[in-house]
Amino acid sequence: MRWLSQRVISFGHALRGVKTLLAEPHAQIHLSATVVVVALGWLVELSRSDWQVLVLTIAIVWLAEGLNTALEHLCDAAVPDHHPLIGKAKDVAAASVLVTALGAVIIGALLFLPYLT
Image (tube, rainbow, N blue to C red; front, side):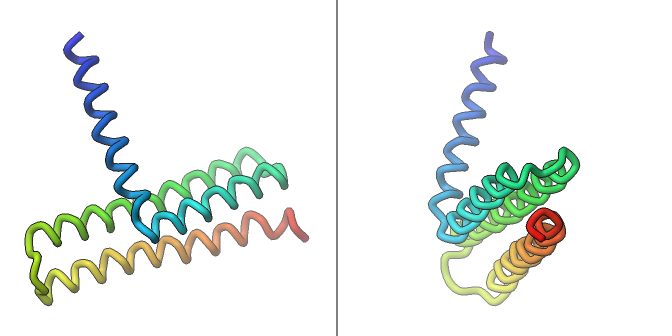
């Protein structure tokens, strides 16, 4: 029974993390994009394999955004004042989100264009 209560508590922490993540403006953009592409996927009736690629792509973008947000919060807590190395770390994390988001746009085009043409 203790194991179960620890799992419930862990899920509570994770849900609090989701709430924190969704409070970020860039995460709200990703949420909007997620809703749009999932709705479009249903509309065009993506194949099973296309759904697999789409879900994995969405998850990777959310992973990058979550890690970027976590790193930013951790850096701000550890070093509240400006530090050039902290700035570089934040820039690299943000670049990772940008790269995954651009990759997702390309994957989205490759997935959806055949259905829309």
